[in-house]
Image 1 (cartoon, rainbow, N blue to C red):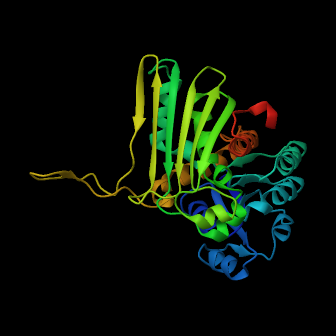
Image 2: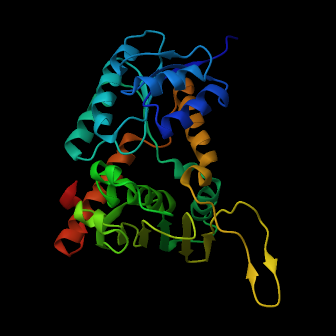
Length: 339
């Protein structure tokens, strides 16, 4: 029986692109990094040179013209995602795209329509679904271990604010940071959101406020099954990358703690102490990025549904837009007002 290999092209050779390239080329047996394209040609050449016979091409359009290519992984700037998805779909290539599809519903819908018309697969990069800790929380709810879900609390705090150049194009805290938490809330509770109420402020870096964004936020979500969820975001937790969840159900609760570089506790007559948690999202979620890409490769080769669809990405965007509107208008916003 012939070995099944998925030939993948990478669009965008920045930090996330290089991470996915490493997993595709070295850790997923049924995948091959076929080609790399980036607006920064030097970055593309360097990435390609690290992975055997991988080719460097000038544009994603040149990449898509290659009949040997089966799929593309899109890690380029957010404002390019929708068009590249549409181009890839029309070329008959399967697609993995980092979140979000776009910052507007119109651009998102155009991309999803192209995917449907071409009958290709699209998986969104909500990697936290593939984290073993959060998966255990999901399993506790899905299996009935904690009964019917009632209250979910998600804490997501970055160790330091992002560069201002990133803030200018990211779409704001609700679309670049909280969007992961919106997806996790739906995933963990297994239900859809009816209403969003958000509050936000600038408490850390005034320059973020000058760009029209926030660095501190709280969101409450009302779900169709009656459950309530809160999301807490901060751009600065001086002690490290803080990622925790707690879910209370009718028969019990489940909670997760941060990940640490070691499991050591130091004790003396005055205190108990341990080292700070991991300080960077790539360290915290390194394994989840492998699992999400492996799941994409399997879905294409086995012709099964992808685990995180374009519709999942659209819903997360809707929730982010509802949160922005809620802050601006100081009121709860129903999801059907946006969607």
